[in-house]
Image 1 (cartoon, one colour):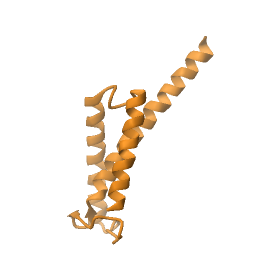
Image 2 (cartoon, one colour):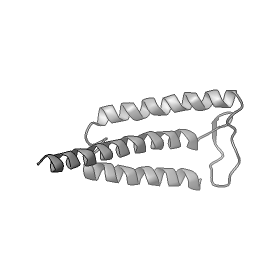
Image 3 (cartoon, helix red, strand yellow):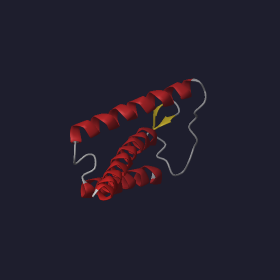
Image 4 (cartoon, one colour):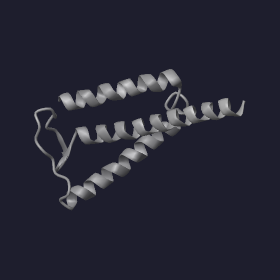
Length: 108
């Protein structure tokens, strides 16, 4: 359970940064939500294919809930994938903003 809580707490921290700097969800909520959902779906399909091929297996851990959404697919996996996609969006938007500010400073 602690892994799920850590993921949710990390996502909340990312949302605080996002809100403070209006990077993704507070700049374009529909687009950001769509990208996170599509990215999560893509990686879930990827995971399910890897599970079918025997590449991914669920390992037991006292830090996880033990809830499986499908064979070898723990509850924490889609939460992690959504967090991964959201973090990538926030980092991309942050890098874009930093580079734009640098260009403006150098151009002035």
